[in-house]
Length: 297
Image (cartoon, rainbow, N blue to C red; front, side, top):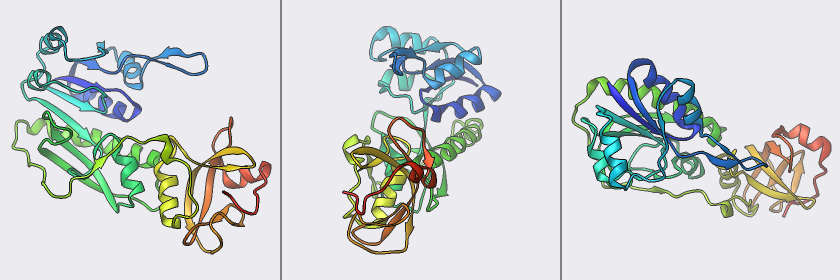
């Protein structure tokens, strides 16, 4: 097939690789390079870097709303567009341009967790499973009918980074299964059970030790690695990146033993953390250079 690929972050790269092995990619659309790093030099997105390495044509318009942008898109004569974490709204003219429409790879079991942060929200909510849906796109936010879905359990120790990588590979495998079946009837999403995965706000990241341990553990894992759940230790903001539920009770924030902290109910053991200006480290390494107070606020 002649495919337009539309994606931007690292999550999208395995999908691009899988499609490029079996189909003709006529163009890759991604977000423009952004200032990054201490020098604020412009840095290409992971998808742009990979597409250029594959010798593919790259386009990064700031909008697809203009007539010119839509005509350029349609002129590619694609059979289908595959969209995964692209970052721009697709107007109806763009959705209608490919012969078989536009397909989206979404990292949840729709209609649960429509929206921007489905992986984070699934972990933070304590969902037992999540998955990948291949959806026929329409104008609404993740409302289109589903062509194929694949569930997967969420492990008790998984972080957003872990689940992100698994779902990315699942999406790549699933889309290459779907494409040969097109056109096919898609299943409308259920009206019941709709939830929205709002974009993660940094204000959600500070840990409140008065909450139950299960909620604190999910917050830590769900916000790892970004933005990273955090607490203050000796005036320093320390990100807590991995944790597990632990035995023990005490006042909320009380350090029980090692890096095990009492919560409003139960306790959590921190297994990986990151100090300011340093790389993530196992808890034992962190504690070699960081003295914990009797209680964390």
